[in-house]
Length: 429
Image (tube, rainbow, N blue to C red; front, top):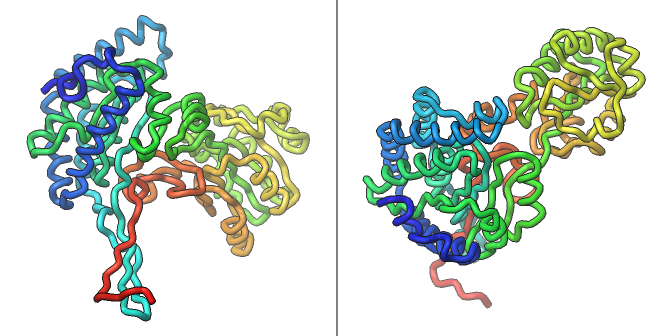
């Protein structure tokens, strides 16, 4: 089957709301099939999908070449084109990642907790799939396969809405993935891709309460902000990654230099990159930490005391404390101890990832307890803030909200739970 015949013959004939309703109902029907699968069934389906992706290399790379040509004609930046571009090695990596998800432990059916009441009722909380998950994402075509694999492994159906820049690549990847599922008898509607780039469809997805169970946006700040503002469906996301590192008075100087340099400069464009550095007035090696960052090519914008550490430090504005640079730019402030550091983080953190460098155990534990972020670290680089580094194998994104899941969201975060109650004839008096 072609994508169009599987999903809908003439999407233009339907309103965005009607299109999303039809896709969602098909997806929900497919999810009921997935919910019955065993661990081995889901693993086999993903291995079949990985094989199909490898076998479709020619078609996928041909489709990607169309997207690259269109992107060049539109004047997309080199960085955007690089995120969009596929080659044989990158496609092999995508297929390998699907195989890796197949090898992850299945969270569905796990008994989270169990107890027995005095009346003999036996209670259990058991993990189950969420249902139908909508993924709204931008230019990276690998998200098509990554999201499909993670959702299927956790027993969820998925409705994908990719960016226009990757339209041909996304359709080719989805078609290959669905072909793999079909070889093991699973419905192709388990993995659907919206067959139109009409922006109104995004709005229809965001308001499809009762049809779509959760939305996950993957992309830039403007996309995530729109999703969070307009959604009537639960959203799993983070808006900004304004991550702090506080160098405590007791910090080891070498560790402080190494960790701050890594946290900022390893990859400046990821959401776990440090965006604000807080230096304790009693830390004796602040000048060397600042110099190390400047010498590595990082622009520093600091308060008056940070500027006094090195003449190359530029003055910071109030806006700098609330900016996610995603570049070799860093805000720096000098603070009079842990209390002002905690106050600064509370005022300016986006609750993504914040870290302390310290040799004082009491200060470390206080930082862990009082910083209200999804990820809080002691003596570690904030660049570790992703699911692969947490041993989760893969992730669908980082969540900074307070409900359902926080931090790297992997298979467990794509499940909810239900109560199972086993009785022997108990009636409530």
